[in-house]
Image 1 (tube, one colour):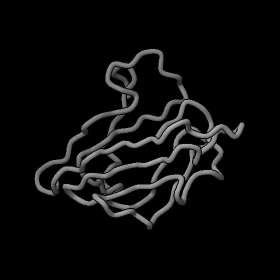
Image 2: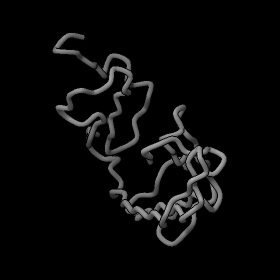
Image 3: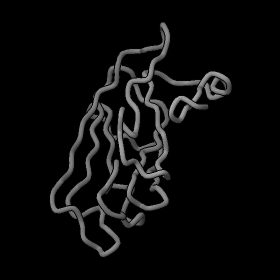
Length: 134
């Protein structure tokens, strides 16, 4: 999750950041913050196939560096696909988004794929070009 300003990392986790798989609160894993404290990552391992997940942040729980909490509850849901282990994987979206302009040079390129990737298979199989040049 990305916030519009830095979050106090001491206020994340526990009941302030909840992840549900269906109706079940996920009590394993952890929450980490990016270096600028603006991006929060749920570290839960692999997600379950064909499952609706809900992220819940209660009002006032997470605060910014000045101590200001969320004014209202934040709830977001997403669903995972059925098992995509058959067939070829594919990139489903990227960040920065397709054809973005004015992207800061320190921005990380992120590829989102429809199934888990074996990192050992990436060397020689993933090429990033700039204006058509490797």
